[in-house]
Length: 111
Image (cartoon, rainbow, N blue to C red; front, side, top):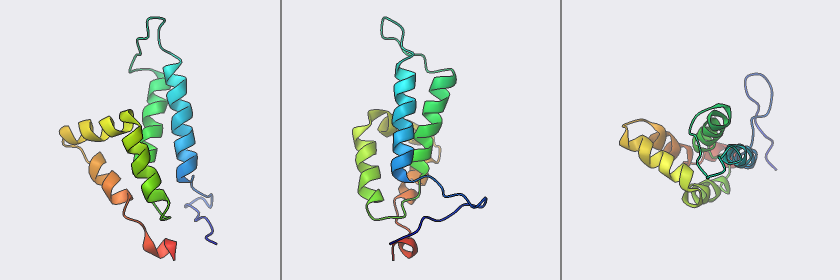
């Protein structure tokens, strides 16, 4: 059984599933801010928290073999995450590169 690695402060970093749950919660909170006509504002505290949670999921380094298909499936299922990667690449940023690097399993941690 693998033990979770600690960060510099000695705390265990969140798992992929914890990050996904946080992303879903932040997404729901942002969607709840929609006006009665359904318009959403891509600004404000809820949107910023949602964006930050999405970046955390996309940047999460897969340390377990099961993380890889889970993370790829999530990006394919969640249009917002997929679009963020696509649009970010169009703006010549590094998010797509970071995402692709993050799904290369850290095999020393999988042993």
